[in-house]
Length: 186
Image (cartoon, rainbow, N blue to C red; front, side):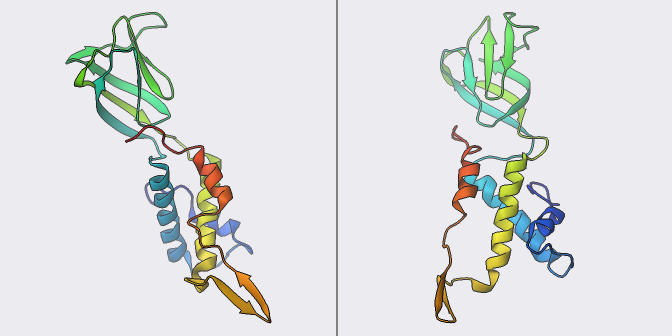
């Protein structure tokens, strides 16, 4: 499994109907897993796995700063106007606190300024959420099954016309992925 892959070869092979038990297409399927994983993360505008980030932002005068990546797992440093802010020792105590989306300041503020706020943090998922993994599996299976009809819109079989979808992804996969789409521009 390559870094950034949202599923495994074994899970894809088990999902295919009938389940794939040979190794003949393992290289192809592995490549499709990596490609589908990258497609999903690009479409979402975010990385799914836990990753360290450093952001330099403009202070806007408030006590809350939405971070670009989520869910926030930890915050290692917050600096405002060159001054390091210590983590708060508890609610209502001076310093910074964070939740899944934001960093909060108590006893001070993100003073107005250009590029005067720096935050270093880790965000993402330790384990790919099951619904994202299933979306990746479904995309891999779709690409694998449609490889013998690339570019075909329809096919005439025994007097019947079979039409093929020409979308990037099925609607159910897009609906699922919409829940994870980045809403804060990177």
